[in-house]
Image (cartoon, rainbow, N blue to C red):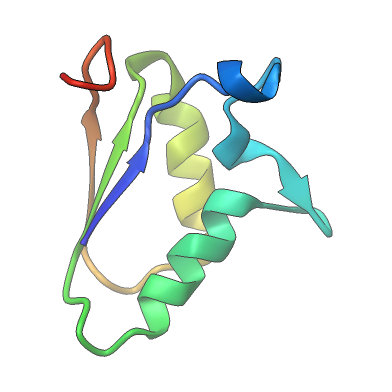
Length: 81
């Protein structure tokens, strides 16, 4: 499963990428990763993020306590890339 988390939040006028905004103390990305962790048809996860947010993405993986293999890759400079 590919998770696209490389946005900027500009359409929300957010100062932080929206996938790292929190709800009840957890990032929205962690909630999504939890769902994929429980989905039997998902064998592995590829998390696409901005290069400058790799550490934050790794923290979200830790927060979600994934047992499935997960690879973090850099997204492009634009949505099309």
